[in-house]
Image (tube, rainbow over all chains, first blue to last red):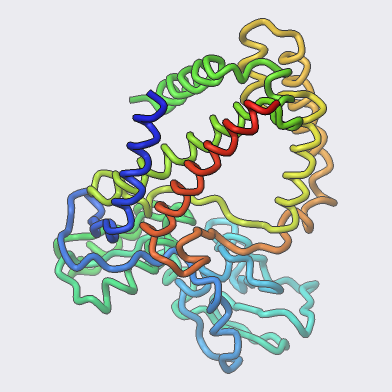
Length: 188
Length: 179
């Protein structure tokens, strides 16, 4: 019995050498067919590659999501909206900008929805909270999207799941504003 | 199916398997640390190999979507400290959390005491969490997997770990015979 189990493990292990990668899958669980692209979970070596961008530039929601998830050192996500809006919804680990908020020179400050702050690394989140909801919490992709869009979607869906979002592959992206809003409401 | 029902079934199966492997007995577990009885090592490593081969092949066959599987994050220093504390507790008690539940369920008094100790530890950590928090969240490295960390294909990692396990099992048997 022991020999049989050992031999089975050995055979499966050797076969794994030649098995290649798992096929890509769509959100409904069915196999989406080729191409079987490499699944990117995280890239430790190139983690803070965007740290040197010019201060004052906008920051992509997915990038911010990755920073929050990876606990980028000295990251401060500062929400400059009203207390009411903050309580209604805010980004994970976000703090509200108040009169007592201070910043250290080392801080990387990401402003959510406008404002100006004195610090070495200031970013303004492109599109504010709505972009976070759309692109991190509810990333969507058309089933027939080109590879470049697929790659971006892959990246977004990984952080999305981390934050409890719902990445989806749809037959057709919502065309009307009403549809888009209906899609957005899901998952938040 | 209700997730609690699934969890209960898996938990019972897990406990039953641990007991069948003899891991409800503290002397057997302590034998691991004196290298006289390597049951713990063999059970754990065969569980790792089984789960790894299962995850790899099920995902390769398109049955399991690995991107849906949660990968715990790495916090290097706090996890090293946690491992050390866990190890000390393991040697002192002769039981780890899972096996203490099994020991308690089969009516062993030491199992009940270890479980009480676990809950006491959880409570103390929770109460003292505020000052611990900075350390708890330090040296974060995100979710790491061996294929990405070592930059080698997943299949090669699977093969290497299976080979390592089979060699280690042989070595363990020899060690036990000598003891």
